[in-house]
Structure formats: C-alpha cells, structure tokens
Length: 139
Ligand code: ATP
Ligand code: MG
Image 1 (cartoon, rainbow, N blue to C red):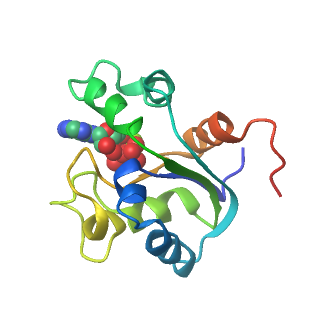
Image 2 (image 1 turned 90 degrees about the vertical axis):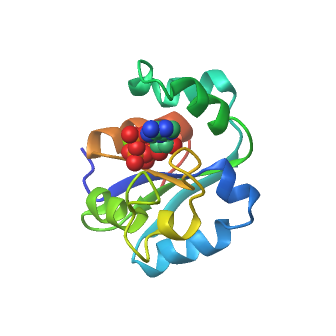
C-alpha cells in the first residue's frame, strides 16, 4: 500500500468558476507534487459509482447530479502524510465550518458544491486513483 499519495478532484463548481488554477497553486504551495492529472466529465452513473459508499444517504442523488454537472479535474498527489495533510488543506465538508485559509473556506459554495474532494484513507486513495487512472503510466 502506497502511503505517501492521495487523490483529489476539483469539482464542477470550482472548474466552472475558473478557480482550478488558484486551487492547484495552493496545492503545490502546500508541498504536494502532482503525479497524475486529467480533466474529464462524469456521467451520473460514474459519479454514483465513485460515491457508492454514500448511496443510502439522503444527499446521494443530488451529489450524483452535481458531480456530473460539468468538467472536473482528477489528480494524484504525493507528499509525506498525504491523506491527512490534504484533508487539512481542504477543510471541513461544510464550508461554513471550514477553517480560515482552507480551500473549501475560500472556494466552496455550499456543503454540496464544496469545490474539492480529498481521499479519506490510503485505501480509498488507491481505489479512487485507480478509478480515474487505471492502465495509465504514473511516475
Ligand atoms: P469528499 O469525499 O468529496 O472529499 P468529504 O469526505 O468531506 O467530501 P463526505 O461525507 O464523504 O464528505 O461527502 C461526500 C460529498 O457529498 C461532500 O463532499 C459533498 O459534496 C456531499 N455532501 C456531504 N454531505 C452533504 C449534505 N449534508 N448535503 C449535501 N451534500 C453533501
Ligand atoms: Mg469523503
């Protein structure tokens, strides 16, 4: 298990707002190296697969609609203690509760349209990276 990598998505609201450059700058300035990156758009079905752990939650259908509403940027990031440090950099799920200076505090519009995703464990990071980069060369 790789323990110095995490996986992120710049979500449709942030890409549409033209905030991806500013967000990637914050990520790099926080010491993360981008080791893979692609822009894509999910179908509602693919979005549902990605967030399958939430399928019993009341917000699941809205989440699938939102995550398939526009282009996203998926990336694999490398840093020591990547998963925990990245969750700290992005801040709480609800931007109203996110700490000052975090990506969600700066860029999220709501608890749903919250600008960015960060894996919650090394295991999730591996599964989610594979979801977007299976078969691609990662260096
Ligand atoms: P992510 O997995 O995207 O990094 P997270 O781990 O902070 O976010 P989760 O609980 O995994 O939060 O929720 C996944 C996503 O579902 C959230 O990022 C947000 O877009 C959406 N979401 C979570 N809770 C709610 C809610 N109460 N109402 C609407 N959308 C929600
Ligand atoms: Mg999560």
